Length: 398
Image (cartoon, rainbow, N blue to C red):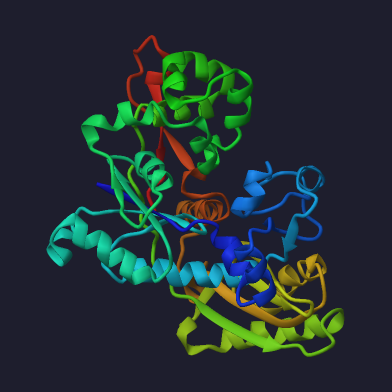
């Protein structure tokens, strides 16, 4: 069985933090929303229940949100603190033995298969997951990820909701199509489906896969599979060693000062013994802002680097994106590349060199755009009259 753990309004709760005035407003029923980051599209983040009652939804344009709810209070977002809190929550779930797939901050999946030997029954496994989180969470279970998500969103108490596999499709038929907004591939479908009069997943399934594919493409075909209780199993994240360096900037948090601090952080990371001569493939540059909140930017290098000058050159172009002066700067290694001494010297300059460059390009593409960004065409049935059956796309082995 697949389990979905949903922490409602995770980003809003973390962004509010220990700000007593904001917490008191939330307890008093005031409408709250995470303010859009500076320089980005002016769309609000997660909203409170009072804001939802006024018609404000996540991703709504700021002007429309204020028009619907003039008393809306904007809470400065803090992506750095959100990332740290979410990482600690994922580690807490992994501490019970689960292989967790984090979908987005506040939403994660794992399978109970294999956990019976550690905790006994499924009820004991769910109790261990709830106890490890130490945060209010909604837990749902089902035969697929989407069924588990629908069950978790339907929970209104601490008691988990488990959907039986035989009744999953019938149970999903009565759920609203807004559930598709929680999947990145189908997030744009609820609005046009609402205009077409499709309100539930049962009505969506009755439209048929050919009609949905013709109107919405691959997203429509995926939505039909989800409505029919068909989905891919959870894929647990790969554990990666992370190195981190940070430095306080002080009152002067912009201009050349940040560039010098960035150079110091790069040199410190490259000098760490834990690096063991490996190159850097992806890093995260984050900052604590003087006015409060944080800023976070992931940088994937075009090739794995260990040259401090080239790394500083690649990262310094991101410093102008800071929305406000920073009080502290942090540099974290997200992915390592191969050791520097294995590149070029020991490779044959013909076929082996091209294969090594291809593997590096595939790795960079997966880090930047996900595991399914690099696929290969596999000939399955060349004599078939149906073009889709002749060749299929399959992942490139790592």
